[in-house]
Length: 118
Image 1: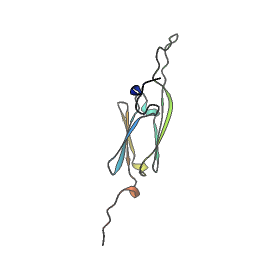
Image 2: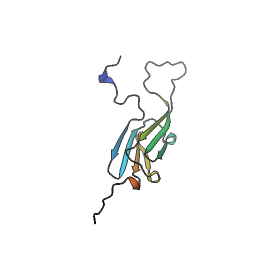
Image 3: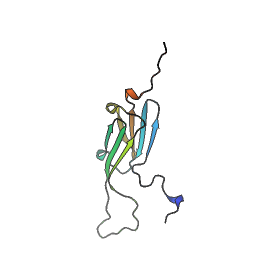
Image 4: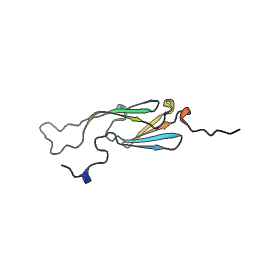
């Protein structure tokens, strides 16, 4: 059994993410190293964000066997419920250096408005 000190934070959840909130938009950063950006599919629906993709498994050469195998491959899907609905028409995704960055502007009805008292 592996000691808790050596377990990765969030092990078993892929991709690992950080979600930020600046008041107008959410910013999601996901670690997707080793994944071809063309295999990524991002969809939104109100307050739901889904990231799908595939990580190719590179097999050992013929006749070789694994001594250690820690890198996994295959298809994945991760769906998140965001704190508020987003405007799907304004979502922007960028991929650089193994990090997927998704800017998710809040839907107009979800933005805070100051109300004047008359």
